[in-house]
Length: 303
Image 1 (cartoon, rainbow, N blue to C red):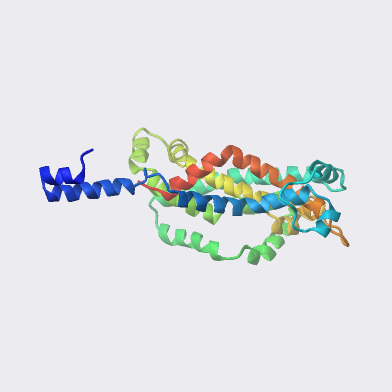
Image 2 (cartoon, rainbow, N blue to C red):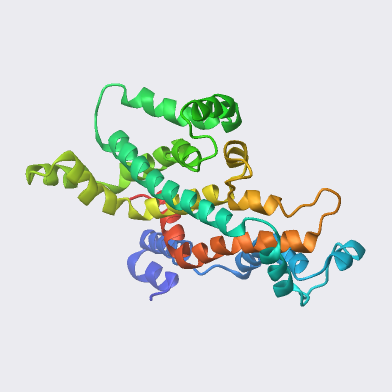
């Protein structure tokens, strides 16, 4: 690569300035390797994010007497982790039933939210109909309303139709979300060209077939991200399942709450239960983390 002075001598000062700008833009572009400051900041953020999980592991591997004497444990976990796991399984709580209920709710809601949100997002992004703009604004505006405000009327409706105490009362209200509709609308607006839709219509494809074979494959990265976040939200939900299901048909967070006693809280037992309930999320992130990053980057970068 020629140096700037050589370019100035051979092609003139204007060419040298242009070459300097291009070289500077290349060094500052996306291919530039990050410096040590970036890595230090990332390591600090990683440590801060991982510390709550590490603290849970520390408490879950300890015992109640040690926690009372020293609430801040040492650097290394102790040797009571699997013993506390056994205590959780031996305790008189419906652990298996709570796990099955939480898994059923999380899986069904993840699938339905992706399908219905992608349908709505495809309609708002690529179809032209009267009231499209105000209706989309209305859907987005519902995200500003706290969900707690609708608990009482929702509970009355579920009781009237006989769904009180059944997991379907938890599944149906969360089958589609305003955030999912907004997310898929924004993604499909830039990721799905009109030319593909027109080509499918010219070939005689129906509206549903065009959606299933054209829009769904194009929305796969964003749909994977939406499914992951929906799964996490459904898995960790406590407020509405606690109200509508009761103690006879609990979810996993409700089961973990039963580990607390009325007079004394064994934090090692409680944290062991919390760690057990968190492990499925860790497994999901381990296998689907790549799709999560791809979905986030696909929604953040267009063009």
